[in-house]
Image (cartoon, rainbow, N blue to C red; front, side):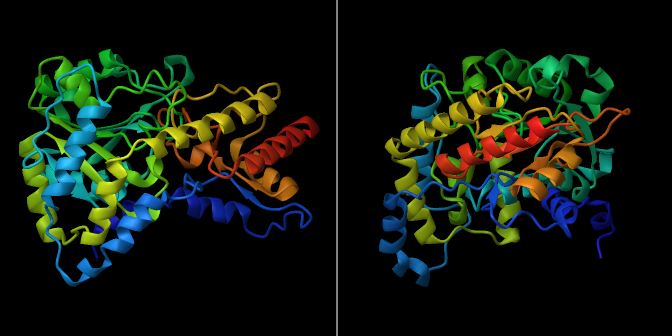
Length: 398
């Protein structure tokens, strides 16, 4: 077996299952799960209708590159979504469909990391654990960049020394952030692009939550948008990852894309051709329908805003809680250790949340996820409100 498999840590939900083991929650309370960021809003019928209408195409092999129609639709969506700049994407050379961004975020490191040069992969802390696993199995050392409240939950990139940047081959960023909901501004993204060119590394920007934001007039800035604004029209050293899972409530569709630097896309395409992960043609047709429509996404944001507002109002008096700029996560502090909080909340209120320390790593005796929890406001409004009231009652009894 690959010896690097032994370096992988248990996934957060494995740790959570162990934490809850042996506990019998109150049977008179319905279970409410806020631990997994799995959208529960209905998948729009335009997606399922397109999927069903094209099931006959299951008889054909898809290509790894995907259909021209899907790539052109994605390029058109990018241009509409990131306005204020001339964001011209070549669908032939700069767009590649992927089977959800989870596998793409992992596979990308395998394609771009040169393990012969003592590689370093930088990533936020806390973060989506796929970044860490990708680095380890690519033969790289993961380096964790603390996301703390004092810096708006954005890594302090200016504190990173030149030697670290020189050794870095790949930087993962996530904006809006999981689990913090923090959004990178254009100046930060511009600075990172400048550093990537100066120190010879690639930026992989996870933008899966980019269409879930609170202020309808202020959508989060994307990496390619920042690149175009600074004149980097080729998106050199920049790759973004996006998905229909969150914006379109279609996590089971396993449909996303990567876009950006044509040379990186071409290299990743070569890798994926051997990887054997082409998207089925019915899924591609359903994806065309989803990326072509914005009405369902606007409604999706409204539903999340409603839940964030309601839950924040209930909990803000008993928890240190700030609504996120974007995403559907809350990232509050806990009055007792996060693992104890999560265990007792489940035992007493039948509400499941994810301890923040399950998403973070301790570095230099500091853990930015410690004494925080991640709450995914994915259930319906009434369930989220019920969960918030139970959490408030639990805290008031502590």
